[in-house]
Amino acid sequence: MHPTRDTLPLKFLLGCGRAGDAWRYAAEDSSMERLETLKYAYNDQRSELDFRRRRENEIFTWSATILVVLIGSFLSSQVQKALFTTNSPLIVRVLATILIVGLTLFSVLWQQKTCRLRARNEQVLAHIAEEMGCFLPGSDGKSIYPEQWRLWGSRYLSLPEQLISASRICATTLLAITALVALWLIHPAA
Image 1 (tube, rainbow, N blue to C red):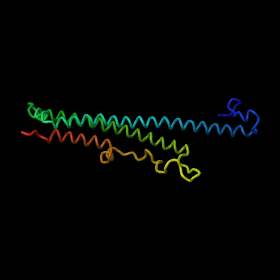
Image 2: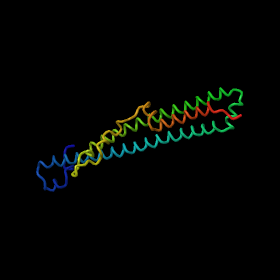
Image 3: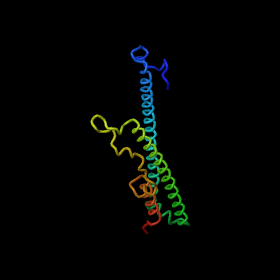
Image 4: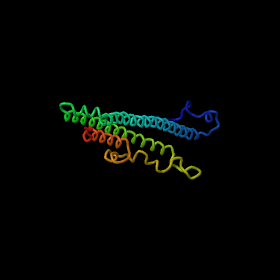
């Protein structure tokens, strides 16, 4: 943006500045515009990150609720007797297995996608914080953000890594395995 009569600071227009000051003021305005843009982008990405976190939690919550209800129903003696007294308990178990596996795959893949998008938002936030100077040392020699926050979002775990680490994806998978154990291995007392 080139300085014009409309964009020059009031100090310069009142004659308090030198002729070369117009460009310095324009550069200051440009850096202030950049800072305002970064603030806006940071807030926008932060809102998106909060949305992704809420969505990831909601996906886990609904799938975990359904799986816990299934586990509870498979463990109840009435459902077990109903499974074994039908004409074809094997077909009922196979259909229930398909339901559990399908629900789990859908939930895990959706959680994984949301997690991947969240990691990208975190990377953008770290880049914006770096652009704003949040990692530069201040007058006390310390930066606003700790140095390890530069890696925010870059340590994204792949699906196999999430399956073996403490994560919602791992918990969803363990609930599905528990539901399948309850369905196939626990038999009613005679």
